[in-house]
Length: 157
Image (cartoon, rainbow, N blue to C red):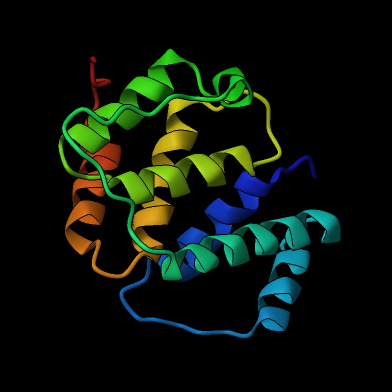
């Protein structure tokens, strides 16, 4: 099976994180299920490490920002996040779905994926995963779900 970390994250999000009932299986059980589903051990470890790094961001303080604050992308980030992705991140921040801190977590987690350039769909799912993992972001998460599932037309910037 040809998979990447994002495929495993989507599997986990669909089977564990998006249920209304919180299930807290241990890491060994999750790893066994993923291996049983056909994912390779190295990719499973990469995905679980990605989730661990996401969890570490929960305790980080929120970044301050002002009306003139501007996020400048590094050359490595611009190689992976095209103008559409950068514009969509800015749009989400402007409408209040992403805070500056959550924006940085999203960018960090996107850069940690083992893929080449990031497409808009992958970006949207990572935003949803980040928001879902952050306490107090229920309203932003609901907005993002609406953008992801109910918007048949792409958002223009």
